[in-house]
Image (cartoon, rainbow, N blue to C red; front, side):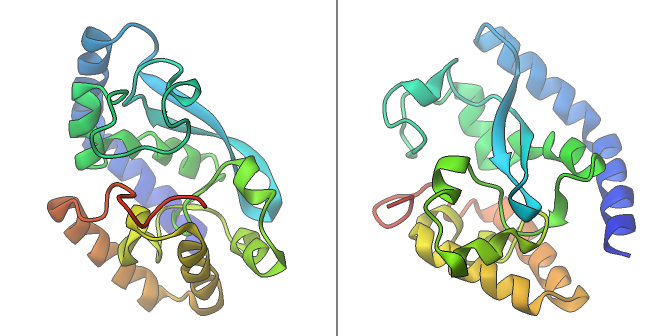
Length: 193
């Protein structure tokens, strides 16, 4: 049932969002040379690696400049287009391709990089018992503004309590976040420690 929901929802969302996606791609290409897409190895269900697809919101090779993987609100690596795309989560639209491929789900813990997963303890590894999602419980309860350990705890709580009712609650809260833009950046309290 969950997989069917993921396929139908992601296919419809890609179709509806295709004009927005095309406009975003053109904006990125005009502003910054290079591919409009950003691919990064992330860790998914059962500790398996996959290539996450996003729209590029930062200068090329941003991970090797400035704060590395950490991104702050006024980070000078963020493109003008990127600030807008991040604000409305348009940069995440290509994640729907990962959902169609079965690497991700609409709802689940956000996928993270191997360097972070390698530091997980046994409890934190439980986060990998479900497919990563485009949105999830930690996303709608503080997302980037939370310390990473709290985000992981929220994700493990989701693994233990996931249900259709909880998923619906997450979807509704996600829509609200798209309008408010709350907790988009790590600020003083968030990020990986």
